[in-house]
Length: 173
View 1 (cartoon, helix red, strand yellow):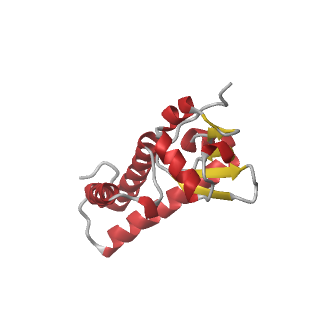
View 2 (cartoon, helix red, strand yellow):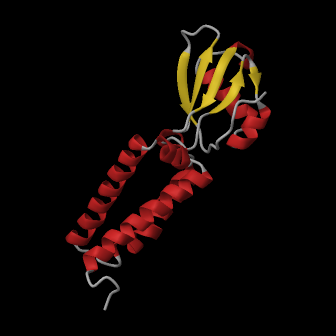
View 3 (cartoon, one colour):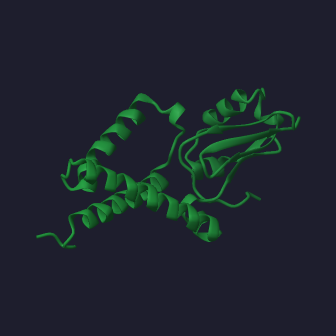
């Protein structure tokens, strides 16, 4: 009847497959902070969740099917977090590395292209942190979690800002 002989095992495997697919898709296509989602981003997330729901529970709308799918997601998320902690290389592959966007007051245009961030978006993030211009920024970094960390020449002005997308890049010479 079904490939694994156990309907609930199929739900577990389907849920894990959907989870891994979505992690890969977010890694490839970028991410944003929930509070900064545009209307388009919100609609997209709602449609994605609706699109994959049946793939995870295989049409099983029972309480048990839903709970097994949810438990599977919690377990795979826990395991991925443990692997990231234990193997830093795995974490770098999964999340990428920070990207320097501004160094000693100079915006690194080539890094913006790799990070898929516009100059205006970086300037907006800098202003949101109370720094009037990029010339006063010692360092701005797109962190692996989507935050833009800004250190101004006055190190008392420190904060972060989320932004979608990032890729691995080394310091520009």
